[in-house]
Amino acid sequence: MQESPTLNYIKEIAGDDKDYVAKLLTIIKTEFPLEKEQFIVFYKQQDFRQCAEMVHKLKHKINILGLEKSYEVARDFENQLKNNNDSLYPPFYQILMHIENYLDSL
Amino acid sequence: MKSIIIDDEATARSIIEHLGSQNNDVEIIEAFPSAIEAIKYLNQEEIELIFLDIHMPAFTGFDFIQTLKDPPKIIITTSDKNFALDAFEYDCIIDYLVKPITQERFDKAIKKAKNKTLNTTTVETSSSNDLYVNIDRRLVKINIPDIYFIQAKGDYIKIVTEDKNLIVHATLKKIEDKLPDSLFLKVHRSYVINTKKIIDIEDNSVLIKQDIVPVSRSNRSELMRRLNLL
Image (tube, rainbow over all chains, first blue to last red; front, side):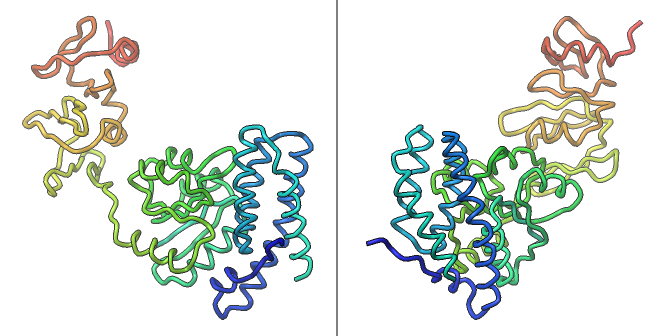
């Protein structure tokens, strides 16, 4: 079963500051689709070095949303890409879609 | 502590800014998405602490540190634990925060930064003719035109002047940066000389005071260019 994203980390650092939760979510909701899009562009170009850069950035958001197992997939995928191996693309893409759906639902 | 953030990710910049806003010992003045933009800012402003992302495209955090003449305190922020060992190569790096950063860990890093004094005062200039060097915690004044030459000796330099020789914990590069180009020239990887103090020049050496200072082949032409040859 796929793990579910959480806002635990964001709420933890925000404390009682609900405005900050909203502000940070707005930033993530703006930045995540751009990074995902950029990742797909580089992947289509088979530019694995740039893909790895984007996975690195996306990895942080995966972590912020508490997706520990997905984070491990992202970390392994980043390392694979650096060695011109893309075999973890399907599960990584699934993770991105999962996050996108979650952010859309907020 | 006046601080800036350098991170190519807007999410990360926002989180560090927020964590900083919860800590009374740090004041975040600016946040930059690239090291290049930060360099321009640092040329005009003095700050005490940088939160620096290591993993940035084109110009990494480590590249950035190497461009700084007198780096302020730096706290590395990264999603990668792999760079931790490299980070300890730099004296200016106070701590290494792995993202996502908690408030507790952030506060601990700030406390470390507050308590750490960087050893950057070994060689200081005050007015155009004075150079203060740190010897056994005393700042000793040297009149710059009185310096004959400086010799690198491992982690130390020997400053030879008209009336004294001083051994100082500093690099040749550091003192070279403090001396006027019009008077001083690096003639060898281990020697910077005061060109006005040269007595005579032989093939690959100069005589200064009673000392023979070697001149490397690559620096010889610049030395000859500086002299008023008949």
